[in-house]
Image 1 (cartoon, helix red, strand yellow):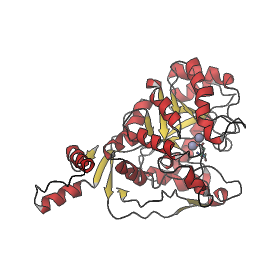
Image 2 (cartoon, protein in one colour):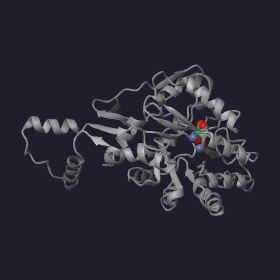
Image 3 (cartoon, helix red, strand yellow):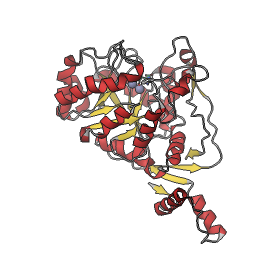
Image 4 (cartoon, helix red, strand yellow):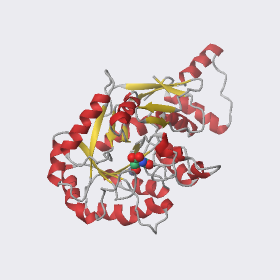
Length: 382
Ligand SMILES: NC(=O)N[C@@H](CC(=O)O)C(=O)O
Ligand SMILES: [Zn+2]
Ligand SMILES: [Zn+2]
């Protein structure tokens, strides 16, 4: 990562800010201004998104350019209707995505298979060996959007998981139990104890990504999990807690799964994302639903963040005094976990007057509201 000033300059300023001291006026005004100006740009290896929903049809065509504009690669979620369950279906879906990528973009979709109790281990191994599929996605049946075909009996998928461990194919996990007697705010923590930990113990070597973690429990488990365990964190879970959804009237555009938790959990997520720890990397979980499907008596879960994610993340990292660790989270830790090189090219973020994003993305199926972080965004990309 290149700050337009040196890292030492930034570190020095931060140390002074912490000590409450004024920066010393050792430089003539024009030199000081030049240093300040240089602090307002950061150049990062081009980010990747390790958890993304592109959907299909008209929505796919509308949202793909939003991600392709800033990101080098993305792990594409397979929860279409019907889901992407075979290598052949993943290959066909990849073609539809490629057709929606704007001319001249270097964006690469990395495909996943939707794990079912009928998944054929040989098909998974073949699709991975042929470079069609990067990972396999585990949805507990009923846990989230389009998860009805997911797994009910985890013993039934053991042969697939063993094949994946053998071939180094990562398992991406939506980590929530679905038991009616488990409170929705506890479902992630209970999943770790009852499902995830037993799966990892039963299948040593299996590489697992805990997707979109929302709790301190998730942070602690991922941090202690060693080289075979990683965790993605979304943009929106770094910004909102459960009050944002419920206080002052129900806010459907802040409803996603796993549902945002209390503030102390959000703080644990920010601490993890900004720590530089290689266990944690960006997976936006940008999940477009059209407004009528969100603003409904039974609204869909998902926040659409592809368009403004990098601007929001720069604000979050700046507020945490951790702009120098943004690149690890967006661009380095993810490729390292997936055994890939970081992107060769870069993006530059510049700080200036507040950037205005249109509140909605228009699609052929209707408008999709962008996630509103609730604070002004001063960092723009490009
Ligand atoms: N995160 C969400 O709230 N929704 C996702 C599904 C998922 O990632 O669980 C979706 O597909 O809409
Ligand atoms: Zn999920
Ligand atoms: Zn998702």
